[in-house]
Length: 117
Image (cartoon, rainbow, N blue to C red):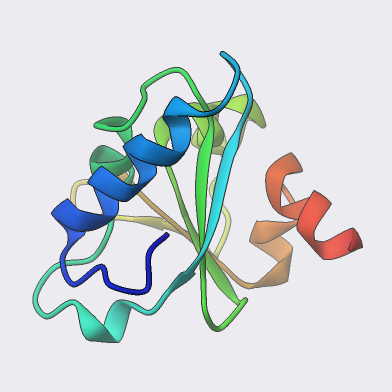
């Protein structure tokens, strides 16, 4: 992700550019998101689905205690059916794409790869 992203739309554009250089099906992992700089709107699974609905995408927050994932990434590891603290849902029970802390992050094969490094 570019250090110059100042909106969710700019993040989506930067991720689309990054995805263009990857082979089909290869997950896209980006890092450096600091949600406090995006007033009023958090990056969501629906936003990341605009980049790709089939490629798993994970954006790691600067805290390293949270990520935002698209629905393909959540579905890849069965996270859509888990009722676990840290897998965030909106007021209607829909997954937001945000996943917090190690118990929930450890359910994702994408984040497990990061934790091993």
